[in-house]
Amino acid sequence: MASREWILRRNCSISPRQLITVYAALCMTSLLISLMFALRGAWYILGFAMLEMLAVGIAFFLYARHANDRERIELADDCLLVELVEVERIRQFRLDPRSTRVASPESRHALISLEARGCKVEVGRFLTEWKRREFARELRGELASRKNTGIQF
Image (cartoon, rainbow, N blue to C red):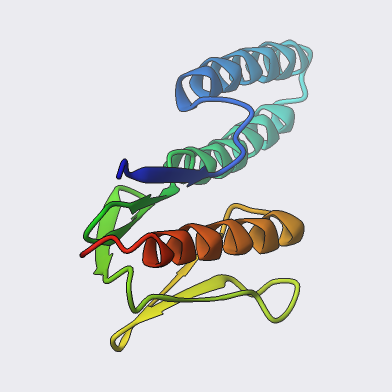
């Protein structure tokens, strides 16, 4: 039977490369305006502009670091592979599909819990509450259909 794969990722409206371009345009605009004020005698505006550019730069850097975070869940014939990528740190979990239990989120902010033989993994960080519940039902259904078709693992 073919494998099934889900990729859950952050909803980023701008890529890190585009973010750098936007940041450069913001810095140039802010610098030009503050230089105009500095030339007219208000030098302290230049200091505030630099502080503003630094704060926005830090915020954009933190945003860009997490732009490629994702969760990849692959259901193959012999294993359920869960791959969590967070700030270039990759963690992989291999679960037995025959014994994996999918627990739906109990509260609004709770994640989907996958448990098999003492190993517990939480997924669904990038999904809304309703999408989490829908994904849990879908994954539970896929696991059940593979068990019911008599596939030997």
